[in-house]
Length: 219
Image (cartoon, rainbow, N blue to C red; front, side, top):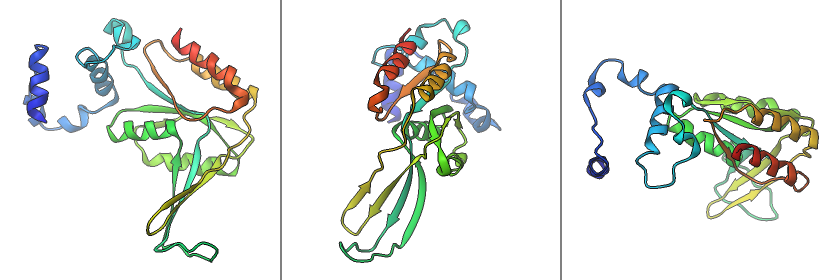
């Protein structure tokens, strides 16, 4: 797609230089957090969709921004693979592994794969808390900043058979209003130039506080 990229740059009268791509050390210092943040902010000025508020701020005022993802009900996903699954019988798996899951967590993982830093907000707790956080350590560009609760982070079971994949998803722990207020205090400390991504399901009893959190970000 290189030709298409050049066509877009030509349309917006953008000049690029490939010289730095050939010098020693360019890979390391061209993909640090500051460089990536600046690249994202500048990209909004030429992409064909509405410019977010953070990109409208003067660059000196904006500086570097951080992307925050928020998952209110993350999950410890337990994957089990089978050569064949027979209902009503004992089935022994051929492979098992765990992954940190949740819609907002997935956004952070995608950003990590693009070498874009993010901070992961959400609720974790119980005997699964530490293991869940440890699963994120393999992602260099994800910084966990979770709010700890008394309930257990849910475990979802993903069964992969020879033909179909079946998911058994837990409801998740009870999140209290005080837990949510702690989350709100974290969100209140975000800078004006930061990006906040709220993704996933919301507990029914916290709809009002979640709407308040969204309003905080808008303001």
